[in-house]
Length: 431
Image (cartoon, rainbow, N blue to C red; front, top):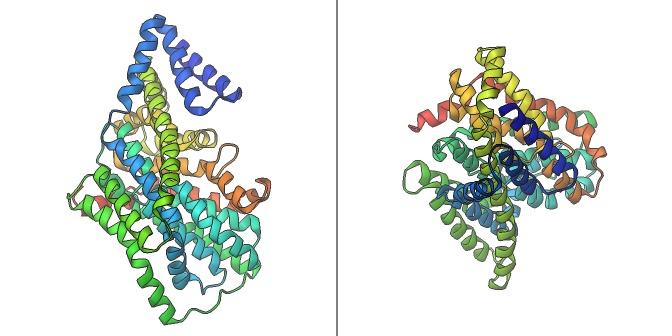
């Protein structure tokens, strides 16, 4: 019966996706059909409804709509430009400097907004046209923007780390946030190294010279925006408030800054709230149906079967991690990040903990891995956002993406096999 359940789940899920059914509905429908194989229709439908409803009954999940709203406020509130000017003052003078400005701006904006999509959209809208105007290849500019936007998924606050905490049974969100700093920064530095090599080879132009006074002024301008990181993360580390409370504070902080910068008025708020509600609804529907699917897989004993199969191949921690990384890289190409985290965490987490991998460490591995899929066709969300901004076909972005993919995979392996790169900072703060 368990094998039949696996077959029905995979076949129905692939079939619904092939028919063009949205992924949230595909997940929910395939879970329901799989459950119907084992039990009668009435209890099957009732159970799925209960699991979907109770899956959203989590205080930690409240952080997601708050961080989404904070990101929307920052996107429209002038904060992106402050960060771009600050990044330009730091790295804009180097050869190919506009690429470095794009990368650093995405790292900073992603760290503040917690959203890779918001970062790619906000920073790309400003930086891509500017880079093209200065003589940078449009495909290269797009590749730099979409890949560097993924750093915001590791550098806190990050919505997907909250989702992983939920899927992992309530791991400390504060510990996950702190653990993401070094991997996120390393990813950004790796992308910058590729950008530097390409800029040198193609002889991309220097940006205009930035004076020391200009740098100081732009730094002072950016301090209020950068202060959100200190307030949100500092408050969580100090135990002043939870991640959910920090998200609410981030909304108040972003709203106050937006009014101070005079980029948002009261009449703009209804549209901002509406966009936030739409985005949050999409994310939470994915969360709800994925939690329902996770329960069905547990009921069908699918995680146990996968665990037995993998551990039957090897009990070596390093071999298990490379197998799981390969599987997740494949999954990331076809599935968005949040549902993949919710579906595969209950499957893989017991396996890796059984061979001695820390759950916090595995969470960062999983996020870095699946982030690569966001920049990969055919489902790559960030890739479509970047190409839409640049008005360029995906096929013209693939070539400049290839060396960046290689570096991102190298960073993934580095984080995978050197766990202290992830764990030393949470340990330093007592997590």
